[in-house]
Length: 222
Image (cartoon, rainbow, N blue to C red):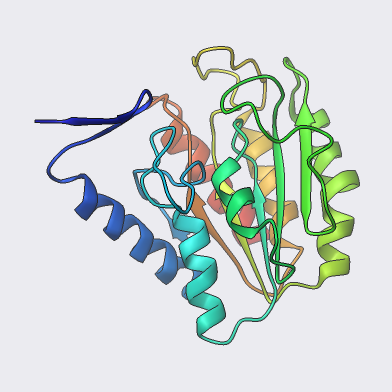
């Protein structure tokens, strides 16, 4: 029988295996500079608990694995519409990992406000109803300079697509287009010598394949 781990997260008999495979695929993507097309997502999972559909924090596990293999400084850019509270919690006191998030303000999980900042934690909460120009400007002006100054060996992307204009989620109201995700990915890919990505949100099964394809184009161009 499925087990309700918390109000937004259910686990069944196969969930742990799926989560372990997702985390392992994220590690391999980090090694190869690839895209981990996995579920369940991970950026809400904390060191001690599952949350928001997430069982294990895939991008954080990949970051630690890469550091164990010799990578020094790692940056994580999260452009899922929801703040990655778990990733932030994991690396809050670790100056070897820079976490930067673009997300809509005032929605689940309620973290990532403008005052949750430190040298290696950058939160950019965005108002509802914004589109490509505003999301790209926020990346260029508020995140890219800090990543360039940090000089990461590897940059990992928590690639969520639920800021898309056709996504239908509770309280989510952003207007990023397919081209917007292509440009976000292209600009992120130019910020480090090695870039890899891990799928986070994005639940419209009609649009998600196109959005992932656009992101892949952007990463390749960058």
